[in-house]
Image 1: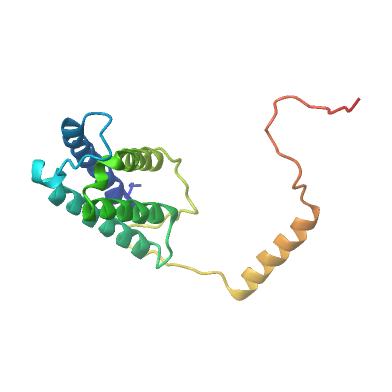
Image 2: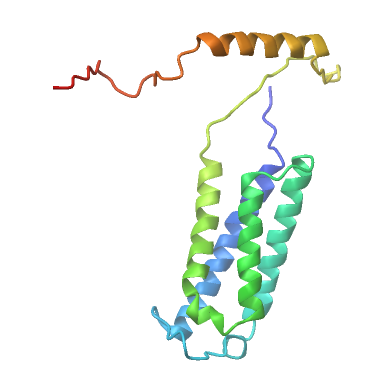
Length: 184
C-alpha cells in the first residue's frame, strides 16, 4: 500500500511559501513606516523599497495561479479556499494600483498574511477523509464506477423516508450529562 499526495499538497506548500514572502514584505514596510504608520503621509513605498512592487505583483500572480488550479481541480466549481484566494488577490491588486493606500490599510496586509498562515495550518491539520478505497493487484487498472439511475432513486427514497422519522432537535454529544429543564 502506498500513499499518494494529492494536487492540493502543492498548493498548500506554495501558500506557505507565499506567507513567508508576505512576511518579508511586511517587515520591509514596517521598517519604513514603523508599527503605526501615518495614513496621510506618502511613504513612496515603491521608490524607497525598490523591489516591493515586483514582489507584490509576483505574489498576486501566484495567487491567481492557485485560484485557477483549484477551480480546475474541482471541475469548474469554486471551493471556499478559491474564493478566499481570489478576495486576497483583489485586495493585493488594489494596494499595488494605489501604493499610497498601503500605509492607510496596513491592516489589510497583516490580515492577508494571517489568512495565508491559517489556510496552511487549517488544511494541513484537517483529518483524513476517505470516500472509499479499493484494493487491486498491481497489474489491474482501477475502474471508475458511477451509480445507476435506480441506485440514485433508491438512495433519494430512503433519504426522504428517513427525514420523516429523524429527530432534528436532538444534538447528540453536546452535553455529557442529562439536562432537564424546568420552568418555575
